[in-house]
Image (tube, rainbow, N blue to C red; front, side, top):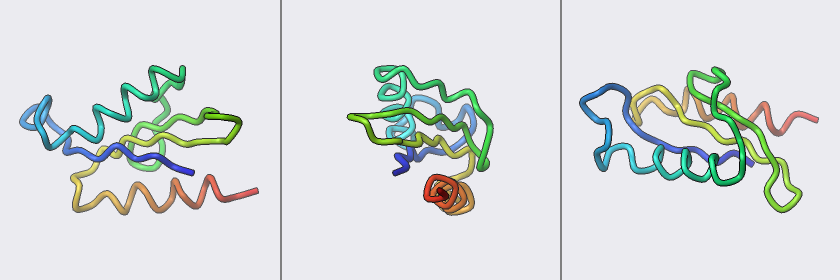
Length: 81
């Protein structure tokens, strides 16, 4: 499973409604002790466990309309055995 926090890059969108998804996933990552410091899949990425299940957390560093470039490879990665 991958939980994606969508947003838009750059200072123009920082702290705005355009980045609420990214803010929520960042807070969730912190609450479960997952570091989003890995740079993978055109974004910040971390893997942890929630209720025993492996979960990937992703903050794409693309604009929302290009987020598929980031999300699709992350989903494929976590589905790999």
